Image 1 (cartoon, rainbow, N blue to C red):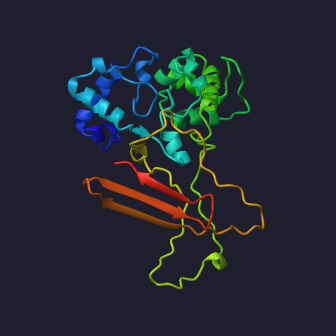
Image 2: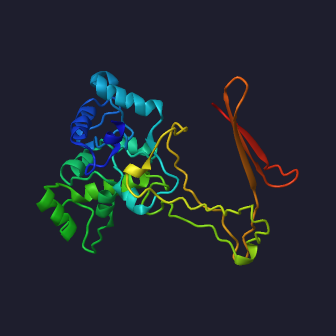
Length: 283
């Protein structure tokens, strides 16, 4: 049932459309979330009141909370960043709180039909040498907004759009989000495999962005707030050859005399290396 709620509109079952409507109507009184700003409580920072939901929907939302299900990704490409809901954005600074219900935010939602970051970015990307910062501006963009959307002050809406985009933190912003990156190893650094029983695996630190909003949901997310730091590699000085680190890893799993499962593992960097690590996995 929960997977059905998390699926994108084109893939979710019919009942999910009604469920999202009921969840939207059950939004908590604080913060104030205008109806058109309620896109998905799983992709935004607002939450529904469990008391207002049916027992079945109540269980679904509780299940999501028990398993800490949230949209999170190490790396986000600009296409996915543009698809995320802009109102009550999950990766924005606290400054967005006072802009979500701004009077011109209402115009952006109800007249310009803005719901996503990409739609807001399209408004800010418009350029015209004839544009003037007043309601009588005759540039083609302001004229279009007045005639097509019945927007009274297009320049004010465009200004607010810029302010809202500034609230989105670098990891989540389409222009500064992290793209995929790869490990660079020179051929001479690859050691020969003298022992056929030992297999060398090269760690690939590429963290591909989710290909869709559905793919970004994760369970057992430990942090209370989504990570806002971009995933980046340490800068490499031009001309330096990347240093290859060899790590030997091992793991074990057994059942002790009390019939309890015991699991653990370790990583060996070298003799007396401070990075050597051993862990016991909880049951």
